Image 1 (spheres, helix red, strand yellow):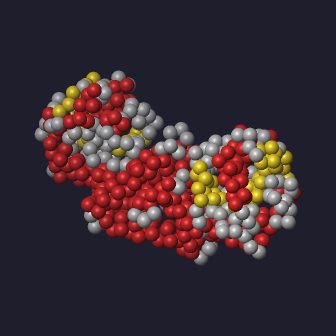
Image 2 (image 1 turned 90 degrees about the vertical axis):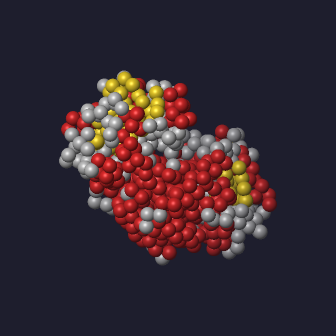
Image 3 (image 1 turned 180 degrees about the vertical axis):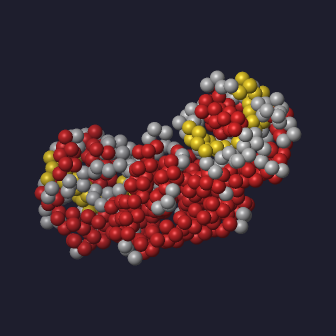
Amino acid sequence: MIQRLAIIGVGLIGGSLARALRAAGGVEEVVGCGRSLPNLELARELGVVDRFTQDPGEAVSGADMVFVAVPLGAMRGVFASIRDALAPEAVVTDGGSVKGSVVAEAMGVWGAMPPRLVPGHPIAGTEHNGVEASFAELYRNRRVILTPLPETDAEALARVTAMWETCGAEVTRMSVGHHDEVLAATSHLPHMLAFGLVDALARMRENDEIFRYAAGGFRDFTRIASSNPVMWRDICLANREALSAMLARFGVEMTDLAESIRRADGDHLLEIFARAKAARDRYIDSARDL
Amino acid sequence: MIQRLAIIGVGLIGGSLARALRAAGGVEEVVGCGRSLPNLELARELGVVDRFTQDPGEAVSGADMVFVAVPLGAMRGVFASIRDALAPEAVVTDGGSVKGSVVAEAMGVWGAMPPRLVPGHPIAGTEHNGVEASFAELYRNRRVILTPLPETDAEALARVTAMWETCGAEVTRMSVGHHDEVLAATSHLPHMLAFGLVDALARMRENDEIFRYAAGGFRDFTRIASSNPVMWRDICLANREALSAMLARFGVEMTDLAESIRRADGDHLLEIFARAKAARDRYIDSARDL
C-alpha cells in the first residue's frame, strides 16, 4: 500500500496509474503536479488526484512513491526540482519510453544513479493525451519493463514491481540498452513510418482526394501518426542511436522490396510477404491473451 | 434487380457482394465459381450462392451480371474462359485493386475493351480471406470506384452503379490511371511498409523477444501485414509503375527524417510530426461517417 503517491505529469500515463491504484485500493493519497492548471483542475474533478500543486518539490514532499510521467525532454528539469525535496525513504520511478536518456539525466542531476530511482516503462498507451484520456484498465495485462542498474536498491525495485502488479501489469526486467533497442524496433520505428507516410501524402498536391479514398486498413495503419508530436520529437532525440540503426535496417529491407517490384520479381515478393504474414499471425497468436 | 449473378471467386469480396445483394433483395439467383471445391461447398452451405460450378464459362451462362473477384494474376485466365459464354446482354465488372492491368488483360483477351465490361474497385476489405470471412455489411458506407473508358456502355455503367448502391456503397468514377495512383498512395504503399517492417523484425535474431514487447499500436500498424501474400504479389506486379513512384517519394521522406534524427534536428522533426498529426486528425474527422 502506497501512503502518498506523487504524480508528476497527470496525463494518460500518470492519470491511468492513479486510477488503477485507486481502483485496486493500492494508494491512500494522490498528489498531482503538472504545467497545465486546467488539466490539474480536471484531474481533481475526475477524482484522479486528491490535490495538486504546480511545484514538483512541493508535490513530492512527504511522498513515499513518486511517478514521473513527463515527456523525455522535461525529465531533467523535474529531477532537478525534486532532488532536494524527496523524503529519504521515497522511491522514484518513471514512465519514459527511452531508458538510456532517463538514466543519463538522473546521473547528471544527482551526480550518480540514485539507488531508489527505478527506471521503468509501461508498454501501454493510446494516441490520446491528457487526464481525460486516462482509465484504470490501461495497464491490465500489459507489460511493464523495469531497467534496474547494479546500484539499484532491491527494496525500491520490489516496491515498484508491486505497484505495477497491483495495476494488473506483468513486470519484466532488462538492461537499459536492450530496452532501448527493443523499443526502437517495436514502437519508435513504426511511429516514424506512420508519421513519414502521412506527411508524404499530406505534402502531395492532391492530398485531400487521397485521404478521401483511404480505407480501414489505412486508418489502422496510421493511427499512431495522431500521437503527440512533442513527445515523439523527444523520443527520437533521446533514442537517436538505436532508432538510427533500426531506420537503416528498414531502409535495406525497403530497397530490396522496391528493387523486386521494379524488376517484377514475383517470387521474391511472395517470399517477403509470406514470411511477414507468418510472423504477424504468430505474433497475434502469442499476444491473444494480452 | 439482377436475375442471375455469377460470382467468379467466392471469397471475402465476392461473397460479401452476394450476401449484400441478397439481404437487400437485389438478386434472384447467385451462381458461384472458384478453384477451391471446399470453399464453394461452404459458400452453398452458408447460403451465399445457390449453386456452383468450377467452370467459369458454365457459371456465366445465362447470367445478366458477372462479378470477377479473383487475384489480379488470375484475371486474364477468367476473361479467356468466359469470353465466348457470356450472354449478349450480360454486364461484367470486377473487384481488382489495379485497374490498368485489368483493362490491359481484357483488351488482350477481347482484342478491344468490351463496352459491357465496367472496371471497378470496392474500397473495402479486411485482412481475412475466404467466404467464411464475407458479410453483408462490408460495403455499407464504403466507396466503390468505377473506371469506365470512353467505349464503356452507359447502360452497363448504370447497372453496375445501381448494384453497388444496393449494397449501401457510395459509387464514384475516375480514370484508370488516376485510380492506380490514388490506390498506390493509400493502400499499396502502406501494405509494403507493413510487410517490410514485420519482415525486417522477423529477420532479426531476437525476433521472438521483439514481438513479445510489441504493444497495441504495433498490432494496429501491422494488421495489414496479415493480408494474402499472393494477392499482394499480384498487386505489386500489376501496379509497378505507380507503386515504384510512391516508394521513391516515401524514400525521400524517410531519408529526410533519418537525417534529422542523426543530426538531432528537433525543430524539423517536430514540424514533420505536427504536420502528419494534423493531416491524420483531419482525415479522421472527414471519415467519421464512413
